[in-house]
Image (cartoon, rainbow, N blue to C red; front, side):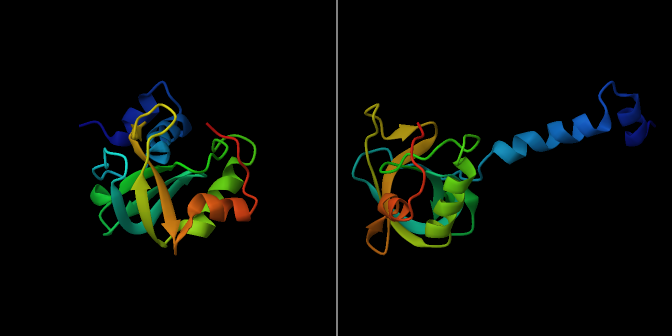
Length: 145
C-alpha cells in the first residue's frame, strides 16, 4: 500500500500548489443553499447569517445553511470584492447587517429577472431602514455591477 505522503511527493505538483488548489474552491463558495423567492413582491425575513461581499448576503431563520436565502441587494451596488474598496464595502455591510433580523422583498433587477446568478434581488430592511440607505449613510463606496 502506498502512503499518501509518497503520492504527494511523487506528484508533479509541489505540496503548496496542492494545498492552494484544495482551498481555493471552498474560499469562493458561499454557504447559502435555501430556496429563492421567484416572484417580485415576495417577502421573507430572517437573520443575516453570511456576508459575501459589499452587496450580497444570506438570510436565514435557522443555523442550517440549506435554508439560507442568498440576496443581491437591489438598492446598493458595491465594488467587486477584488476591486479597490471591495473589502471595505464588505466590512461596512457586515457592520450594518451581520446578525441583524431583516425583512426583505424580492424585486426585479435591471434584466427584469428576480433571480440572477443564483441570488434573489431584494431590498432588505433593518429596523425599517433599507440596508442600501444605511450603507450610504456610512459613505460606503458604490460602483459595482
